[in-house]
Length: 498
Ligand SMILES: Nc1nc2c(ncn2[C@@H]2O[C@H](COP(=O)(O)OP(=O)(O)OP(=O)(O)O)[C@@H](O)[C@H]2O)c(=O)[nH]1
Ligand SMILES: [Mg+2]
Image 1 (cartoon, rainbow, N blue to C red):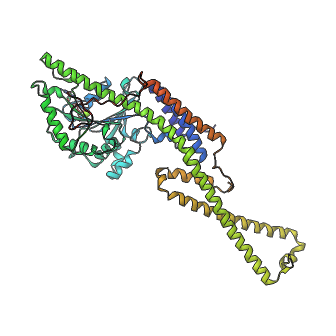
Image 2 (image 1 turned 90 degrees about the vertical axis):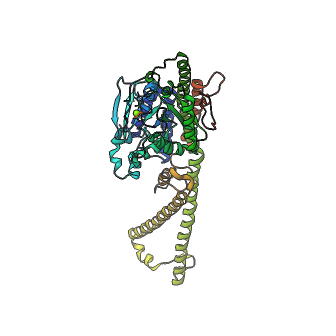
Image 3 (image 1 turned 60 degrees about the vertical axis):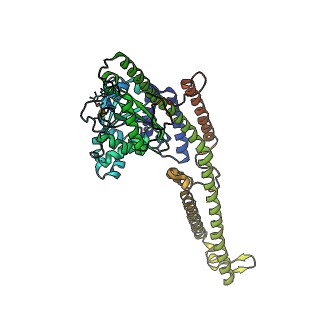
């Protein structure tokens, strides 16, 4: 029996985990497996690669921001689980990636577990850290840890808790990880502390996180949260605190975004006045709900995105990859035939000229003295003919290889192939192996059966979209629009009021 490849066991594990979290995506894994099989036959992927690696299967929600602002408390509240330590001193000194487990207990694994596993968003992050700060990549465990938690709220998503933002104390490597997290996240919650609106950490957060979020194409994935707003209940000056926070955001250049003010229910200082309490609680619950819905929405969007990627990949294989490989084969064939013609034609012409010049022709008969001498030795004659054929074969294969290299170089200079280039090159090598005839019009591994499988994958992906619609679409048949209930951020694109 052939041992199961690294990819095989990875996809099996992925499927097992998705089975608990999203049954539609569980079947999508099978379709990705089929695409991998086709791509491997085409020579695009090797045994250890999978199209499934090109996407993160879980939506990533990261919580960043000011230290002691309640990032970990928010995560604990959201999960309904006392997972993260909290406290008034700086508590978290590393990033914690939190994902679902069906085991009863929480597990804490070192950063290495994340660095080495392509299913997680930190796969090979140590290399990126090394680029930012040499030698630090080895200390990956000092920056990252993985926690698994059985909270139902975590199904189908990954949360990231982070150390409080403090640019002075932080090394370039931490900033590098922060940037990496922001790039990968589907949703970024940036936390501020209503108790200390002017802290240094607030300043750093504004400088690094808010300023950088501005002008990004995905800037709507940032939610700004002013936490611990219960601290304003005593003086009942929420509006003032909120407005000054927004001014600080505006001064950092933020002109649009979703802003929320919150407090964590179980941690709040009790609010004595019942009317004030009711007002605070009503707004807090609305905002917690809004953030919760936004998180849920991200999960839905991610499921559609993965199915979309499946269809796109199937489409790309059929309408881009196969035609490109066919073009390569045609190029290679044409070039080889031309060159073969030129080289052998030239040699033949040279032979004719030399023999004519030497007077070896008797009418239409060539009489080479050497050949005539050997007429009594048919074995030697055969050996000579054999050597001649080997020489011709050698030239032909050299010509084939040269033409293939040229066609490969031409393809390699195509900037549109960018990160798919190594895959193309691998397929080209497979297609131009010595035993493959140059007269084949279809690429290696491409036949009616593979074409049918590809059509089936595309059809299946439409089926998955329908299933997702059945799961998530509301009765009017619409996919829920991104939730836009927000507070009055400066000139907000999306707004509500507290
Ligand atoms: N009154 C009140 N206290 C809160 C609230 N949220 C958090 N706290 C308290 O604030 C302190 C800091 O909370 P953490 O959750 O540890 O804050 P953090 O942002 O994770 O802090 P670091 O990990 O150190 O950056 C803890 O003592 C919490 O109990 C809130 O909404 N209201
Ligand atoms: Mg914390």
